[in-house]
Length: 201
Image (cartoon, rainbow, N blue to C red; front, side, top):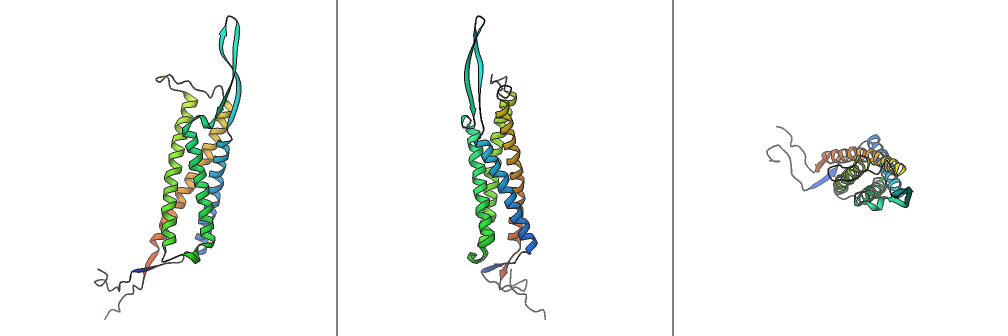
């Protein structure tokens, strides 16, 4: 097919250098995404509230107990913390690659690995956000069909802090999605090395 189009095939590829403004745009988005996912990780990991609640009444005497709500009590929130911590580490690593990884690039493979890792990070982060959003809604509204009581009417600070973590994480997820699109677009700019149009007679 290459010969039919007047092209000379070669099995090597070289990346077309991306303009400097676009490189800085991608780097800036990574920094902001890192701040968002790192904030979500810390806010959720430090989410804890202890309250003394009335659990029963004997006659006219209330029986109280000290209860604690922590993110570790929900596997969905634990997964949320792990997913956002992974996204934060990924962004730090990619920032280092963007700043100093060009000299280790080989036939454009760096751009391919970065694009694949970006997509995997988006998938993991979106899974963590989805799981945590489900549990947050359950804590806020409960489920009368399953007889699961809501807890946000009792642990309001815990729920508010968890909601803040979710907002920060969704901001990071949106930025990660944009970053993944830009990383994939850079692959389109790869062109075969040694392919040259034959002169038209």
